[in-house]
Length: 167
Image (cartoon, rainbow, N blue to C red; front, side):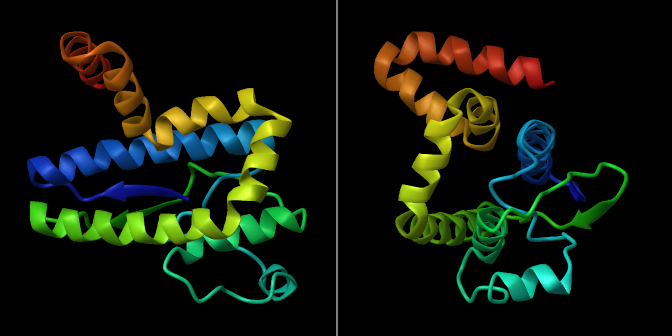
């Protein structure tokens, strides 16, 4: 389900654009694979039978990622809908944003530690299907890789180009 940020501040507008990227990535993966890397923790729907089939909602920091992967492993399919949406609040301060990102990073780290092998196996089966969405979900990986390879002047140009293309 699409997540819409009630954006009042500059920071909240930037978070809105980030969530927009997540929405697009979910839509792309839904169309191409019938799977998404993580269901939207703010709003999703599934059946009781599916939750029971995967052993319940996991007790972990990133329960949305973990639940989506467990459902995918048992053959569950995902469909992204843009007809429904949920409003969500974004952090109002940089400190709050930092706490949120720290929590997300810790949760993602544990999730990757527990699932890296199965994720790599899935990726290696059809890497091109996943690459476009990985760019949208983790744009900082691309920026960091480019920075390491090309140096600061070219990176600055690429960042300005990417930001201007989003506006």
